[in-house]
Every structure is written in structure tokens, then in C-alpha cells.
Length: 258
Image (tube, rainbow, N blue to C red; front, side, top):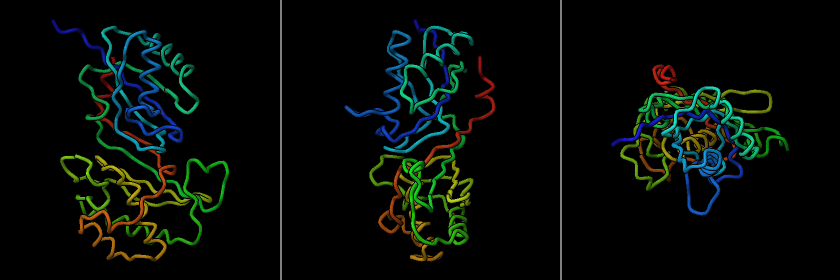
């Protein structure tokens, strides 16, 4: 006889500096492990959560979703209490915003329509943003980098920006947004897509930085993408400047709150 499954979504954020990424790994601290342990302790039974994606060591998330299943149904008031208990249990670099019940088939990873990442570059040394941005010295041409970012829309195969041997079925991605902006002493790259390859954003940023420093030109960007060779692309910028900032779901997923 099948047991009744109640599924719950968690909306959270974390600073990834002290973690070896989101995903469970042997004998290393990860965000997933920390939340698994916290939930299992509070609920007094083994709980394993599924995240909306993976982030590498040192990468942050200001908006992240995960789900977990329980046989027990928890009402809204008790979910608020669980959120409070989790925040008291977890370290200061993980915060739980909300826990809510959804349809049993709703999936934090597979049902996501798109994800948005932002990469933060500091043009001035700042001790308060050292762990969450990449300090880059020298003049850089943001207008040229935006022209390079627009080229990304003409392609769908981003093998050149993917870490090798990642065991994915396809390197095809649909980029929805890619642009550079400036705010005070920071330069920010924002990119949205239906999916991302491992290390893809950091490799794209490193390549576009090379463009902004006039180390390569716009034609080189096209050649790099068409080569489907990671060694032709730019360097992978440090993880500490990268944030997952938004995850979008079909309207019916969020409306499926029960």
C-alpha cells in the first residue's frame, strides 16, 4: 500500500562562502546537508531535500527553492513555527524565508521555467564586499561587453562555456536575458536562461571581461562559441561574485499551495 505523500517547498537564501556548494558530498559541508540535518533533528525523522539546482563551492543564492516530503500533513501555522525553528537551528549564513505545502507532484528542480544569476564585480577594494564580489582593477568597456552579451542570443549550444565531463545529455540552453549594468562602484552581469551548464556563467563572465579589456574582439566571441571548445573561452571568474537571484515556476505551481 502506497503511503500518502505531502510535499513542501522551502524558499531560502544562503551565503556560500563556508560551503562546498549546495549538493551533498562526502565529508564536506554543503548547504543541502545542513538543512537535511536541521529538518531531521527538528522533525525527529530522516528528511532529504531536493534543491532547484546546484551551486558550486563558494557560490551564493539570494533566492533558492527546495522541496521535501512527509507522510504527515502540517498546517500553515505549524509551518511558520517550523520556519522559525529552522532559522534558530541553522547557522547565520542560511536563512529560511518560507515553507509552504504544494501539490505532491510539484518539483523544485524540474518544474522551474528559468533561473537568473548575477555576477558582481567591484571596481574599488572594499572590505565589506570582499566575500561576495570580484575585485577587478583597471578600465573596462561595459558598452563593448554588452555588445558581446547580445551575441549569446544568437546561439543555443554553449559547450564552450561548460565544464568538461559533466555527464549532461545536452549543452543546449535558451538564454532569455544577458546584460551588464553599473551601480556605484560595482559592475553587475545579469543572465537568465531555461537551464545552465556547470561553470557556464563564470566562464561567460570571464570571456566577456576579456572582451571589455580589449584582449579579444566581438568576432572572437562568435568563434569561441562556434568552436565548442572550453579551452578557447576565457577564464572562470572566482565563485564568490556569483549569486543565484531568481527562480521562476509556472503559475500553477505556486498556486498549488495547499
